[in-house]
Each structure stands twice: as structure tokens, then as C-alpha cells.
Image (cartoon, rainbow, N blue to C red):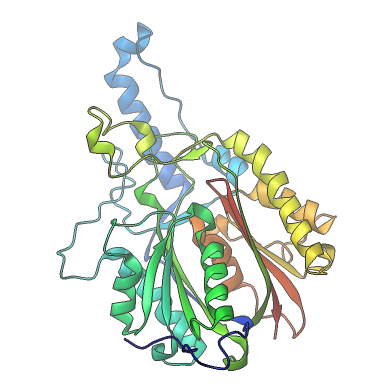
Length: 386
């Protein structure tokens, strides 16, 4: 295996190298579910449930379920549709989860497959061979398995010599991955790092929960972080900052210890659960203050940022954070929203926004990639067009 670019004894090993976002990539599943289709399936399930348990509902032993609506979903979230790896299972009221067959161990896993697709898109846009990449970080809200690492499988599939590892910081995984990559660049441990965010969030979503059945979608993104003195065009990383504060308000208790607790396998908290109102009240001020403080420490006027590429969880959260950071009502060009098409894609959301809305930047113009989510976790990455 090839050693890192700055070997022991090298005169350059103590130099801190600047990092650049050199390219991004996107993989979008072929299948899609609209709000109307999701509501139709959910309401059919509600009718089945209420009919099956009519006697117990009348006796007060079981709670009747309330139907959902397109209007409720769009008002609560701004989401209009989502891409999914499997549509048929999601819209079947008797199933209501994606149907993804398990693959043999000698085949590429589905998470690695979509991660590789996003990575290949990024590498093609980068214009260099994958052999220039020294490390792979797979940063996502869920991993298909505990080990071997998804990152190592992706590394192998791309023919990259170096090292890889998985990282899970829920919806902030991408910005935490970019920060980690920039640190590897700074210390000379790598010339270029590939950060991959494969998110099959439909797998952890409870499609039978009215308050959250519409939230998530599937996608994969990739980011190549490269040493500035070897990069051509791209985005100078001006500063990165991470923050975590423990909270139970967003949680998924699925894990390897579940089988050791008899009777716990079917519990609702083995899927995504959240206290949405509490999350809104607590996360918005935390993230807004973090952005403004980090900008001040970097000597950046936050009100002069050309664009915000925020985590795509809820349009109302993004609107409020945008107002607090910019000091006014942001325009659609300043505060990019893609969740109407993609829904919440966890760590990939802010990267999709950046990937799809940056071509109009001139050299020297500045923007912010920002994530926030379970943990609570938050990450800020200020970038400037080269």
C-alpha cells in the first residue's frame, strides 16, 4: 500500500496545506414517490388499521389513526416528492417499506453501489484519475452493516490505493466528513480525499407514522477535497467548524444489541423518531448562532454571503435560519431549497444544494455549506470560489 504524500523525514511534513472542494457528484434513484401517492398509501393503511381494530378502538384499548394529506405535508415541511430505491413496497399499504433484496457477499452492496455512482460523477467532473485519491470516507446517517466498512468496499470498487473508514453523525455526516478530509489535507496525510454520502433513508423511515411518513428520500452524493496547491478550479475552504450537543429529540435505536433485549425487535423507536417541535425550537437558534460566530471568527460578514447551502430537513427551519444569518428575508437564490424535489436526504441534502446551485459564482464570492441534525450535531464549511 502506498504511504502518504508527506513521508517521515520530508521537509514538508510540518507544513499545513490549504484544502479545496475540487468536485462534487450526485446519484439520483430512478424511482420516485409524490406526496399524493404517499398519502394514498398511508390513508389506505389507516382505513385498514381502523377497520381491523374497530372494536378495540370503540373500547378505548387502541387509538384510532388519523389520515394524512398533501396540504399537511407541504405546509409542515415544504416537501413535494422524494426519490426512493424501491417504490412498490413504499406505496403498498400492506407493506409500507422499501423492498431491497439482500445481495450475496461477493456482490457489491447497494449502499456501495450508489456511493460508487456518485463518486464516479464527482471524479469525472474533477477530471483526474482516481489514483490521485488517498483516502475514502463514507459519511452517512445509516450504514448497511457494521463491518467491513462501506468506505473500504467503495475504495475497492473504485480501485483506490490508500485507506477508508465509515463515519456516522446523522444529518451532519457530510460536513463532518469534509472537515475530516480538510484536516488530512492540512497535515499532509493525503493529497485528495473522497467523501461519499450514500443515504437510503427510506430504510429507517416509519411510513406508518403520520408525523414523519413523508420526511425522507434516497440519494447519494460525493465530494472530492484536494490540496490547494494541486487543485485547479474549485472552492477554497476558508474554515470548518463542528458542534455536538446531546439530545434525544431525534433518535433511531436500531442496533446490534436489540436482539439481547427480548421483545424489543418491533418497537417503534427502532426506526426514525423525533420530537419535531422541540427540534425546531432548539436547533434553529443553535445553528444560527454557530454560523454567525464562525463567520465573525473568519472575518466574514454573514450578511454578505452570496448563498447558503443548508441541510434540507424543513423549509420553515431553513427560512428562519436564513433570516437570522442574512439579517433579512433571503431570496430563493440566496437560500437554496431542493427538499421540495428530494425531501430530506439526511447528510446529502446540503451537498445536493451545493452541487446544483453554484455555477453562477464568480472568483472571490463566498458561500456556506451547513448541516444540522440528530445529536444534536452541526457543521459549517465556508467556501470561496477560486
